[in-house]
Image (cartoon, rainbow, N blue to C red; front, side, top):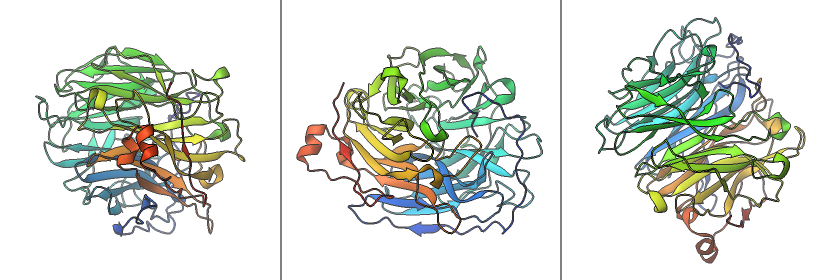
Length: 496
């Protein structure tokens, strides 16, 4: 779910209850990527046929990797108002060589007759190393305004076979924008704690935290920050000491804050101000917004990225900017990520950040997936949407050339929602076996009255982390787009 940037709170959601055509659920399917040089594979597709949501659509992927296993999740069969028919997963057990796709059991009445939930939204993925358990959090939606849990948490020992979800903190009146993360630091006294963040629109966006100590099977009481922060989209970063940092937008998405815990989630600090957000509204009415994307390195350094137009004349287009912290309290001033020249007309948004967990500090490897328009002054009819990727081999001090992964996409190819055409409120990146992967939604022209929007992965590989000079001397080739027959661009940029 997502509130509009005009801060309209939907206290009651009205969904069509029809499920014509049945669930149309298919068993897990095995997908093998096209051999190089394509480097791109569709890892999942909407399997549903119910009449109450729009097919074939998959939006808003999240992903996490541990060792050679990558687990990604996305909404499948997007509703116009809120949520989707179910959450689809795609899992690779061999560092992206092959993928297995399927849907989560026990969520909506589309997959589980008698369920009180008509749709489900906001998938987020984590891994609990202490309990060898994969977790996918999601937000259930019901049309009768009855009480709901704060989140559903689906659990798996292998990322392929999933249990019916655990209901976290039942009895909520309104929920939005969950995130989940686990303490996988073996040096931490709280190794095996998992943390769930969500907010309550009916309470003006009051931020809540829940903690599990048994692999997500049970969850403790709701905790709030000191000072009762109101916000949206907090992301969990765990340090080797067990301290937890949560960068988050405020409830108007005009500021980035961060709060911390030093006692395993028993209490949470007063929020500190990280930065203001200066945001350019994207053309074409695209559903978007400046949610922060955050990750930590092996030493516990925190990195936060969001879209921001402060460096552009007249705020005409968004860059992606980055701020870092060693403790979650003091943050650096936002720095522009040089995807394009300052004089370009390109607009960048919806970032998904990952940091290689085996790297740290000046050697931290950063991977960033995002979307962009080449021309920020486009309209619904003329906007051309692309997915892109950029990386840094040194903690964000310098960045590689940006790579176009997919595009151009017409906005008419995307799932329509009450807040505009949608690829998601976020996308994802993940490191597996030291290699960065982009996980994103892309679309082709619709066919037969159905959309053609699905979840894709792009194996960028080791060249994605080399310097510009190394990349040039290595003779790197562009990664072909999945939508256009024209090769994508690898754009040289000036490091500022």
